[in-house]
Image (cartoon, one colour):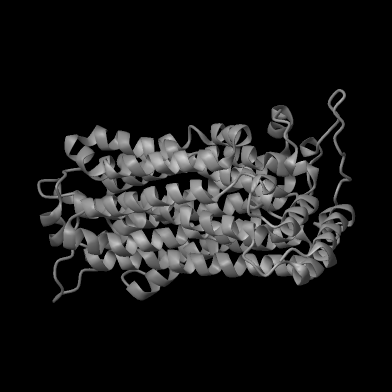
Length: 511
């Protein structure tokens, strides 16, 4: 039932937040909000499921390729019997030799695993521009829908030739390129300041659930129904989500037909006119000369080297070195992402609680979680390289490396929305364009290492040490450059006769 007094109180609280930047108002708001599910929570849930589908499509090839490749007839030195093979066990390589349809060597597999990221790197900034022009509802529905259709066409494309399936993976990456910039652009209009860590970290944690699901199911599906079933399942579910997204989601609180007045007033007043300003002119020069932006570019790019190394290489490592069979490989490959989901959700909650309770400033929180998200993965990747054939230790270190890497999101990846709410999508498009380069460079470099040195533990030692180095350097750069206050170039100005509200500069200690 409509409660006018409650709405007025909520709107006043939002106005006070915008004027005074006082965390106490946020605590008070939580006591008077409506009991129905909030529109921004529906948005977060739909993004969560969307990211599940996106990553199931993105990662399906990484696991399926183990069943797709037939190593019979390939140079023997490239496919060593696993160093961790134990007498009395079935030969872990024999099942793969008998099941594969394609004769792709390590070099070709690296190229194919990187094909997605060639397309993914192209349209990041374009996606942010499209979100500002036509809104995230249409952009997300079209991009995810088209990617799902191409995914469904991937199995027949593979039989047509290596470069045909390469083209399919390239197109899927191209369509997915607009998703993250659109995601950040929409949250710039929907996320109240003290809920940003929770909302953005929760919905992006869907990436880990999607990875867990596809890694767990891909091996089982491949063994039971053949590897094409992996692509049919992930593509079909993504297509269904695209239709649901278009029917349920709306671009801004003011355009949402079912949002309560109480929630709409609070969101708009707490975020302020900076985020809802419809001026589409982008201060490119200021963006590309901003030190905090360059810090995010380097941090995002270097952290993704480790992410993509694990994402594209973990199933192969588990098969080649740890000697897990096809079915077990999928389950074991999923464990690091299960840990990642837990760390993301819990880390985001802790981050926002530390801020709302005034235990730590926003900048201190971002730095703390950057340390966890960049230095700890480096430590565990290096440690994993020296455990030999101790499967339990190797799997545990890989789980911890990937789990701690996930808290970089409440560390510095959410920072795009803080320093420039109006241009959050554009900033993420820029940083994610650079951060996509490791997506095709890392599998290519790793493929060359494995091709030249063989699929041995020593080869994987080099691969993990390289990834650890990128984590360490990227984390150091972020710690030295991160800012949490809205940047001057991101604030609305006066343009001719159109007067816009000039917000007071917020301090690092009050975000």
